[in-house]
Image 1 (cartoon, rainbow, N blue to C red):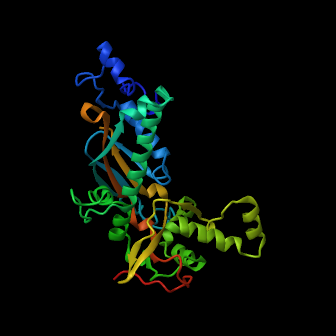
Image 2: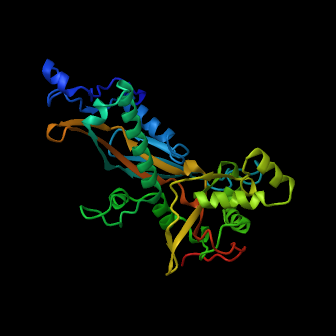
Image 3: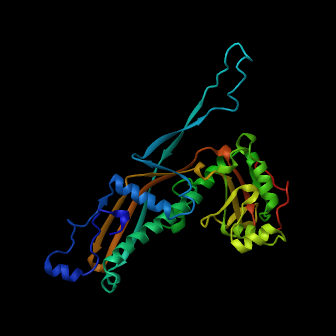
Length: 348
């Protein structure tokens, strides 16, 4: 049995006719519709996180209820002074604030034709594979939702699958655009990502966070990652030669670069562009992925269509711990002219 749902009775999806004859067929009273235990929920959450690029780098908050507040502490800038400089110690009050999390319910639904299982030679192994495939697709969907969700997107029966995934919550990008300081958002107007861009972005970090760059990553879409690879490899230097030989991509200005396959490359910029993308400079742990342990896995046999229906319900939320830690570039067009230092504008 798949280790994701260890201990959960997943129905035997093969040999329905034989079980009907023996009286052991799964019926309404025996269908294993299950709410996962805490241990099983944690295993499922860990599995989903491990299957993704960015969720496994984010801060994962496991919740027992639909709402939760997590603390965000800030001790300020300078808290140390010479012991004899003042008549008494100047104290600093720790800034305590909270990040509210409210989960939203998501539904993942699958239909399986009975013939798929009856005619397959893998038997029990196929059932395990099916469950793993379900978890993989749920993980991919949730990662997409984490990045691109925007609650202003139209949802409903007439809306697309993507709209109904992305329109029920606000994801990280929406949160960043709403809350990152304007001076730390570089609008690039259709320019291509370049070394100058990374230079301007890292210089846009507030000085108090610049010393934390060991915790930072460049989070970029596929083609931006590939362009940086090409730019470095083209250099007639030892670095370019070593990269070609070793296949190791150095990050810009000592910050590692992460290729995020779910980053969109069809965003709008200005009034005419519809093929732009972002670059984010942030500690990945600054991205919060909250998931409630109330995870349900349900199966239903549909005799008239000779099929099985499987449904997974999860409750999830996304947040940014500290928007001040982030610098983001928007309006990047991979086929545009290379960005030149100082060319970006900031939102009004």
